[in-house]
Length: 338
Image (cartoon, rainbow, N blue to C red):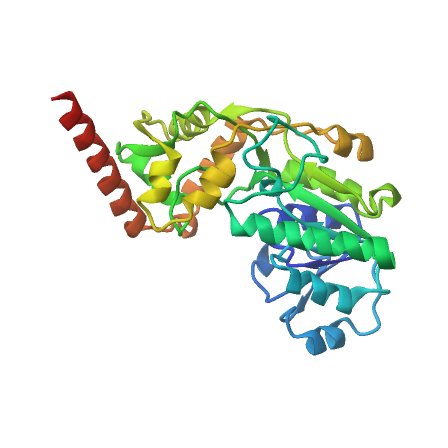
């Protein structure tokens, strides 16, 4: 197959790019040229800005594709642009949405693709819902061949999965654990969550590419394994060989005392216990099984980060914020216990 990815080198998309290339498909990436050194030799990069429609038309020329995958479309204007650029030039358009679009608070902890899409807490999720609505309307009215894919918390070798972190990623939390400092876990840490390694996600996604039964359909792709946030953080601590010093703080409090978007990312997503029913994606891709267990994937990621100093991005602002919040929390406990 001949496939074009818009993006193609991110947390989710890099694993898909590598898998399709290994299977012998012709893969093109339309992006600004990041992480090109990590790509297989048989992947072609069309370096450019997807927002420059005239330039993209020149880059792609008269090319036609079996599938176009959009990984960096966050607002309706971006998918509307894609419809203009690629209508009639491909057989399938795969849009990466988000499982955070599902109803919050959930009426049922078991999530299927028929669970309503409604998230009043997070603009990111509402924008994804709007993108889905536009694309499905294009499918119904004009036959636009869309397949919607909803990832939940997918991670790769560059960053450990976390609930509470700063703008610079996960390293500062790993560093705090290594230094014996306390780390913040939202809530009491016992809510269930699902993390999916990008290599597992790629198995299911590539099974949808060129799949005639996937047109006009939406699928979420996650592991079947459920872990608590306490278990996730303990896996990180075990991987670095240090004790976990957890401080549990309510998500609502964290959202109220920070400039980080914890209202969206916690209350509108990670603070909610969810169980994903993957029956639909397994019916579409019968050989899909998520094989990377949480503790194994986290250990592999930590080992990779420790071996690559360029991934160890310091975040002194978040570090200071953690110290401040934890100190205030402990002082309040002390005052109430006095």
